[in-house]
Image (cartoon, rainbow, N blue to C red; front, side, top):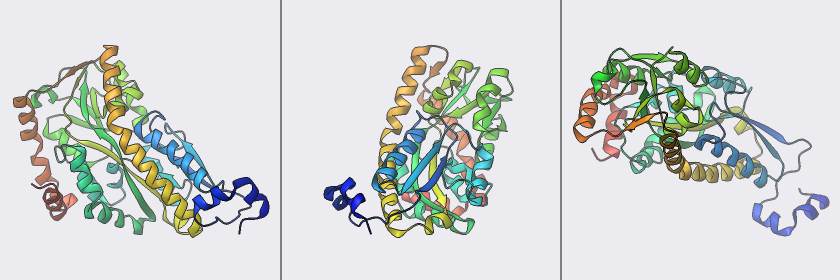
Length: 333
C-alpha cells in the first residue's frame, strides 16, 4: 500500500495512471541490461528507452542499469551470465541461441528468407515467434519481445558484385551454422568473432570483410576500414529481448505488469526507428566517402539468390524442415 508521503509525491493523477498502486520497496529492484553494440544503434536506443519507461512506470521500484558496447560481457559470455543471474536482461542477436541448443532461432539467419519488414512481422508476431520463445523456457530464459536491427549488407576491401567475388575471402560472422553455410556457399572462409573485435580485425587484415546492417557498420566505424560494400539485403539481423526466467517470475506481479508495459512501448519505439537509423547510417557512410557502396543489378541479385537459396535445404536438418516450411507458408510462398 502506498503511504501518505508517496501519495503526496506522486499525486492522485499519477496513481490513477498506474492503475494499481505498486508495493512500497525498501530498495529498488535492479535490472542489469547488458548488450554488445553502441548506444546510438536501434538496440542501444531501445535499451535506453526501456530504462526510461521501466523506471517511470514503476515509480522507482525498479532501477535499470544499461551496459552497452560489451562493457560487461562479450557475445559468447552474455547468455551464460544471464542464466547464472549475473545480469537480468539481454537483447542478443537471434543467432546466439544456436550454441545454447535452440538452433531453431537460426531460422532468421537463412539468406533471402524475408524481403521486407512486413515479412518479418508475419514471423515474429505470429505463431512462430511464440513457439520459438517457448523453447527458451527450460533454459531458464523468458522471451519478451523481438527487436529489429535491419537487413544486412556485405563489405570487404574488394568489390562484391557476384558470388565468385567471395572466393577465398575471410569473412567475419557471428556464431551461427547457418551463416557458416552461407559464406561457404559463396566460396568464402567464415571466421567466427566477437562483435567488439571486428573493427581491429578488419583494420589489421585478420579478416577481409563482414556482414552487418548499416547502423552497426557505421557506429563501429567499419566503413573506415572497408573499401567496398554491396547493398545486398541478403539477410536479417534482429534481437530477442530476454530475461532470466526465475528473476522475472519472482517479481511482484504489479511491478511485472508495469515492466510488461515498458517492454511493449520500448519494442514499438525500437522497431519504429530501425529502418530510419539504418538509412541515416548508410547516408553518413556514403557522405564520408571511405567506402564505395554498390547496388546489385537484377541479374546479379538473382545470381546471389541462386547461390544462397540451397542453404535453406542444407540446413533443414538443423533448424527443422517443418519450421522452415511453416515460415514459407506464413510468407505466402
